[in-house]
Image (cartoon, rainbow, N blue to C red; front, top):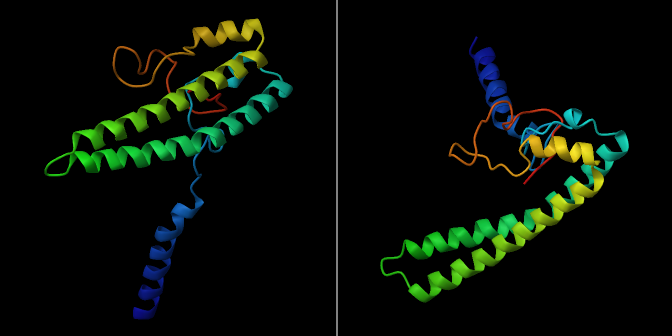
Length: 161
């Protein structure tokens, strides 16, 4: 009896500890992920457009991932500077400037991505996209949040930074 119980506990712990290995990594995941509620089916995209949009999205994620990592690292360093007993104003200002420069680069990448998406879509699709909240921000404040059915849904989504 002890042997069976021990084996069952070991199997359970093994499954529990390794379950994270089966999770999807960063990026859009399997037909969901960083989604702004714009479902490609609603835009009636063709297979050719879908292929181009998928390639563009993958390219965008690869381009911005290093920037996001740098922003995360610099922001952590900035927090450490603020947590010092006697924070150095010049070091903090310099680190804030570094973070701002990286955020500007990230915003430039987002803008370029949006222009590339616009090149792929037809005028009618662009009109639908505008009605879906192309430039809405996520969150719960007055500028974002769950507005009607246009919220961070799941499905075959077009990433809109």
